[in-house]
Length: 251
Image 1 (cartoon, rainbow, N blue to C red):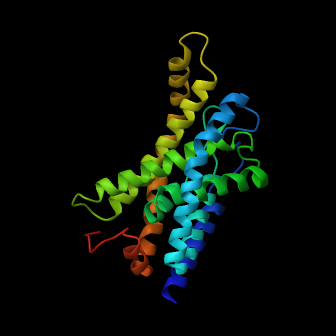
Image 2 (spheres, helix red, strand yellow):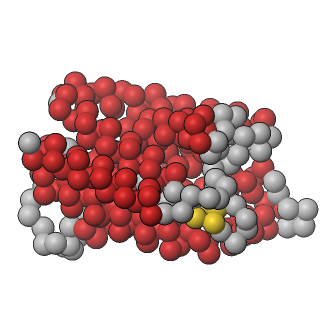
Image 3 (cartoon, one colour):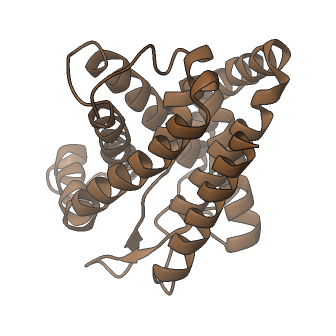
């Protein structure tokens, strides 16, 4: 009963977020048909191995503990809601949180690659965010690079004596920033500047998105901590089984 209550609390929390954040802007995911076919294919190929390993990781997790299916679904829902929130940027496009940090902390980066890619597919088909031809590039930045960063940051910072919430905050915030750094690299490689080449183009893209993405990374870290604290209160056994928490740490 306590576990179901935790899931309901988080779902209500996500619903509240989706209602209070404005959504009248264009999506930040690289849009349909924007990348040259060569680069689109390259990023598809780069993402496929992570998807394969992610499917194996999820299957192993579910086989060992079928009760974690609901928690897996919650991690996917969290990523869907946060990455669908669109904040207008100075460029006329927009920036948004990614939501991949929570799933990466709970289930590892490979599982989050699958969940993140599913989120991107639904957003491309239902919300016109991103696209199918650019799915590989968007998945690599948000569902591969982001979760890898979140997992690494959480595991490293967890070793130090600090409040439990701080590694979660750092993992989510830095995963958000790395996602947009990778997106900037992808765009710079595909569209080098006439003067200065890829480096000049990268500096331009990084500068454009830093204005809105830095505060969004902080916001994502806070939102992720709130959800993590709810799960810690009501799903402590599952988090210990997943080796996410190992003992009592000062809050």
